[in-house]
Amino acid sequence: PTGTLRFEATAAGFAPGEATASVPGNDVTIKLARGATLKVTVAASGGTPLAGAGVELLDGSGKPYAARFSLESFPDLLQGGTTGSDGMRVWKDLPAGTWRVRAQAAEDRAAEGSVTLSEGEVKELTIRLP
Image (cartoon, rainbow, N blue to C red; front, side):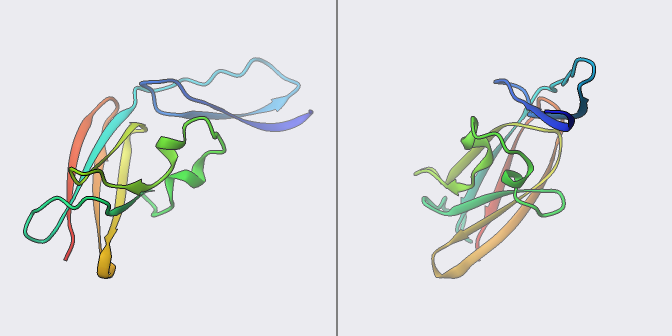
């Protein structure tokens, strides 16, 4: 098709990238940056990790990360989910920037945490629910 198109790309170990270009036109190059990893632990107020807590990854403006891309080939990156038996949820290959994580457990206990990631960095975040 002719017009302006949006291109998306991803590769293991790299943050997803995107570019907009007019078609027909020249080649499109998408440079991918090394992805960061965020390890989130959801815990009770006393510090005990909570298995099965709901978690959602939000960008710095509070929008779900899933709303940013149309690619369906990497659902683990895009979707929220629940914590494992160790109370942890891990997101890999994230772009550098500020991220928010919303966590919720039974009885409508909810809390948010935020973290700033650099390219290729691995960080841990603990969110304590009331």
